[in-house]
Every structure is written in structure tokens, then in C-alpha cells.
Amino acid sequence: MSPSARTSLALTACLLSAAPTHAGLIAADLGDAAPQGLLDYQNPFQAGFSASDDAFARLRRGGPLLPPAALLDDSATTTDILGIVAESMSGWFFGVVDNVNSDSPGSATAQWQFDVTGFHNLTLALDMAAMGDFEASDYFLWHFAFDTGSSGTLWRGQTDESAAQTYRLSSGAEVTLNDPLMVDGVALSNNFTSFLLPLAGVGSTLTLTLEAALNGGQEALAFRHLSLAGSPLERATGVPLASTLALTLVALPWLYRRKRLR
Image (cartoon, rainbow, N blue to C red; front, side, top):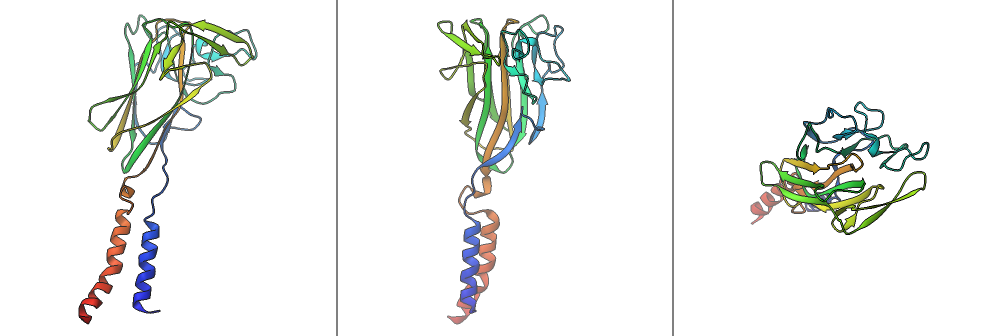
């Protein structure tokens, strides 16, 4: 094979390796598996409140911190008219019940930090569920920030006092309550609804902050399957840095020979 043919094949191989790839999962929490890409988690109330019926924490059935009854849907095996997390659900979730209490007179915040080094075009996915006759003052907010930059709002949940929502329990029973929590025009139910948002920006660390204030023991809020997908940052221009270097190394001998022939 001639040198020019070998060069052509090498260049073709490098260009093929430079083709963009699809976004993949880079970080996750609140699921059945261990957290992925999680650098830090901060929550002053993770250990619980004085009252076991109150919560603002990462939880799962069986503990170590037991979820309040308002979060658990046990209607398939016992009398229960309020709940979100079915008996068959064994993974992690974040639960909120009456977090405005004697231990926390105002809103509470929890914070996750994920390693997103080398990725861009991030998309955040999160499942949300709620059940109760919520107060006008009840709300939650999700914020995000890259590195030490300013934060932006992702989702806002607030009470719609002009609406009602019908909730369906594991037993099949239906319960209709006034004043549901709304997110992006969607009334949350006790069955998890998936929400998806692209994140504008890039950095090494992504900080997600949940702020919430629920003031009632018969109002429950839960989040599950938090996940981040993204594309390798080096492919932002369509040609990775490694492939650019390979193209240069392959082309140098060819350019040198052309120079000598002139």
C-alpha cells in the first residue's frame, strides 16, 4: 500500500472516531442503586425531627430513618387513605412531611453536589409526587448552579387553591382532595410524574438545592429518580481533542514529504 493510501485510511479512521456520541447518564440519586457521581450531600434535618411523623430527608422503607406514615401507601394490605410510596417500592426517595415545625420554624433546604467535569448539554430528570390538602403557604423550589456561579430556578411547586385532585391508592381506592400542589401547570398526584429540563451552562460541579415548606402532617411530598445526562465536553465541536492530536501526528509525515518534493 502506498504512503498516500495509508495516510488516507488513517485520516478516515480518525474522522470516524471523532463522530459525536449520544448523551449518557453521568450522575444519579434517589433510586434503587447507590448514588452515582455524588460529591456531597448536605441536609441539617437528615437525621430527622423530634416528631417521627415529620420528615425532610432521603428515605426508604426499612430505614435507617423510617418514613412517616403520610408518605407510605399501605392500602394494599391495611386501611390507609393517604400515601405515595407503595409497599413494593424499596428504593431511595426524598420525602417531605410537615417540615415547618418546632425544630424548623421556616423552610428547609437540602443540597446535592455532582461531579460533571468534562460534560456539557446536561439534562436533569426527576420524578415528583404529592398528596394532601395543601396550605396556601406550602411550596417547594429546586435550584441549580455550576461551580460558584449564580443559581437558577428549575421547578417551583405551589398550591392551587382553586383546584382539586383525585388520588389513586395501591388498593384501587380513589381519594379526592382540594388544593393540590402544581408544577409547570401539572397537578401532582401520588403516582410519580417525570419532569425533564435542560441545564444552561457548564462547569466541574453542579449543585442542586431543594427548598421546601410544608406545614401539615397530612400533606406529603416525594421525589425520586434524580438523574443527570450529558455529552462529553471535548466533543462539543465534533472533533475530540484526542482525535485532533491523532490527525496531526498522521498528517505531519505526509506534509513533510510534500515539502521535500517541491
